Length: 146
Image 1 (cartoon, one colour):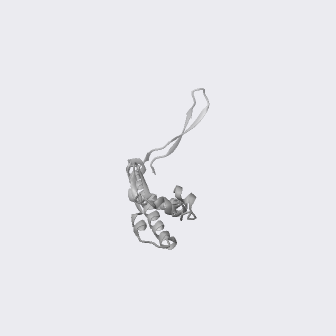
Image 2 (cartoon, rainbow, N blue to C red):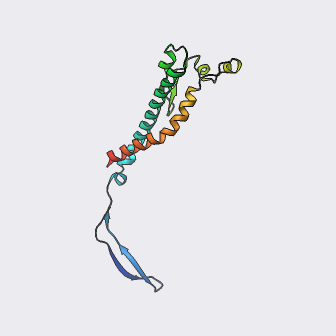
Image 3 (cartoon, rainbow, N blue to C red):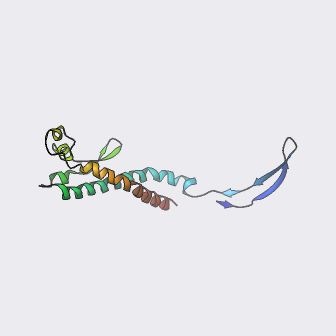
């Protein structure tokens, strides 16, 4: 904001008391005022979702590399970010054994194998990093909008 021509003048209140008033002229300009930042935010939100999803996919694949005992590569290759309605979701490609590997199938209740909880573990880890990712994307968006 550019304060050009500020001044103080004395005046009278309608009831007869003294009143101090401040006259100020200013020029407001920039990304907040002209709307360019507001226009850029939906794209930033999409980018935040995509970057968090990509990070989750990478983390899930890395965890599969560590925990799977006899990996064929099929499960790892099916993990991806998909659009579901208005949201992005990390999915396993609807493999028939995906829920069993995760440990969320009814079959896990009746067998010794309780699953690896990979998606759930990575989701907890990503939640702690999501704020940092969002801040980086928003900072970059604000810088570009200036």
